[in-house]
Image (cartoon, rainbow, N blue to C red; front, side):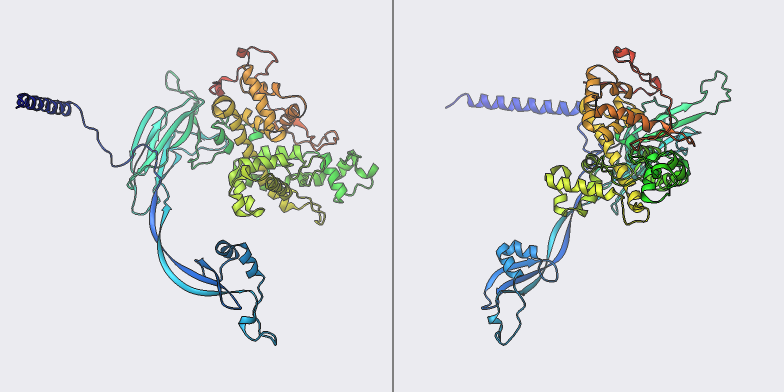
Length: 606
């Protein structure tokens, strides 16, 4: 008999009692974790639903005429004969070829019954209705952001009262609704019941403050987490000791967000997360409300020469018919063509304004680039292999097709098969990429020998939209270049105006020139301003983009004094825009090159 048995059972009982007591003690002092019915984290869910769909299967038999032997069976879910692709899928390429080569069985003196006919015929064997379960994606909840308590007036976006943030949540599913909206402004959390939220906004610094927000739904999930960069700058004497001031108190309001319901003057500003200068952008980056705001009256020798060559202007009384050997007009030819030049360079203003409103690319910037590139003669330039008002090249076409996926998805099926386009531009064969680039350049080539003016004006107007999208693509590329070099968004390491100048370099000289110059500027501890980066542009084509940027950013002056003749269509009279950034010396110490205090972004490089 084992005498340790009873003692062993006593120890087991005692140990169990101790565990129970400990568990009760823990339960008494530790609050149990609460489960939540809805994920209040703004991460969202992938909404799915299963629906029952009815369909009909049509079974076709492909048989031989001579003995009705079954060759293969084909199944389709549409009325009418099966498509060639369906026959190939079920029967193979050889059977498809035999089917395509089969003629109708026609009775003749030699053929008196179907058994004597060669080839194949189709027979509908059965029609079967059915049902299947299909998983579909449902629209998620969304949240939009706007400004309340003021109506920001562009281009300054000025308010006369302190604005509030207005969040509006939408639940697209029937029988579901928004429970609440929540998030953070800076580090301060907020929660609002229902689908609408008003939050007073504090004044911010020049770099603004980030808002993060999402909505919770009765469906049992949350929307995607959205962000907005908000800048509220007070203006006027807010600190008068006696409270008496003659200054009008104002607030400059800017919001950068994909969810913003208001107008964003520059879509590239959103891409970069870079605010424009307080009080609005400089003139060369402005977008007038009406076409009259773009009126110019520049004397363009290349444009005049093109008009004379096309027969739009009779300069027969001038020496050499009014044209120099390089194709530009001489002084006499220019004077004769002057009135038509003025009309011609302004006929695209309405379309430029419309495209600016559609894309967020500044209208004045586009007009300045057209002036520099083509002098508003949008035919094909054989010397530079470029076309359109903005002289789109193969390099520019490559940029817009690669960096603007939404444009690529619309344009590619016009040239290539849809299944090929689904691979994306970067994954296409080299031959297909070349075909798309060439097709896009030709789409904007407005040269038209059979047209009365030698130019297809509808194509010229079309090229404006293509050009704007190529600039959007360059903005994306600039943002990626800066992120690759610094690990931060463009707006965190540079300024709005400088980023536009980088974009012009990218458009004119290519991303290689820009990327190399930025890398060298960072390695030399220079800030990423235009004055700094241009010092590191390589000689040759890269450095040539400095003059290109200067020509475009200096606003033209309405004048009757003709500019000097030039071989290239680039000469205009210009007045420099005042610079707010000190000129950088070639060999300064890092502390000698500092951007203006009021627009300093966060400078942080790896």
